[in-house]
Image 1 (tube, one colour):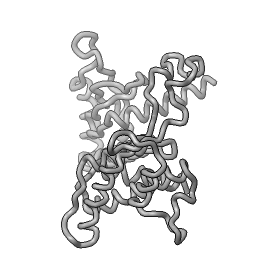
Image 2: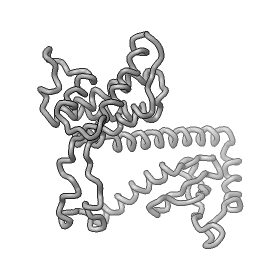
Image 3: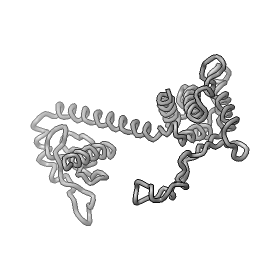
Length: 272
């Protein structure tokens, strides 16, 4: 159940963070907040604190009341749940990363702005119940995102990475489809002629004038050595970011880096 709550919190929070004015944003906010608070309250004070007298999960408003009653208050609006493993208290020798001591990192205390979240809930009610327009503001969303510091959640980074990967994959598939359609339209002779001209159109590597350039590479769509890269991937695996001069297939920065990471791990596994 806790994993499901964290996943729903992450999906809904990422959605509303990226598109706060989307239709139904108020309902998405409520889903994210309820699941996020339920995960936190259950992890901190047990599942019994999450349930009401009827055996159902409490509303977001009721869960905020639990937080107010059990968490440490900081100032007039913030309630704090301390990091169970604060970096500031760890032995420097315990760090698994020799280049960065844990003591240099901030503690991941969870700061719950109860007042702002209550305002956010209030702002969702009118539109959800047919009494007017929505009233969500950026500060409400930021307070929602801040819940992710709690150890029961910490799922937003993965959600954003998954969304970026899905977007890059869809973009690449679309680019491949457009390139294949172009090849069918121009025919083999025109494609071969373009391939012959590719070397003249390509700007190769030059230490002064084009230091990030790469040599022409084989295109994954048409197969011609006509892929002209403006630069390479961030790992230096030779995966170019650019366009094929024959079929106009475009490889984005995200796609190049994803292919580079796959190639990197393939090489490492082969070494092992």
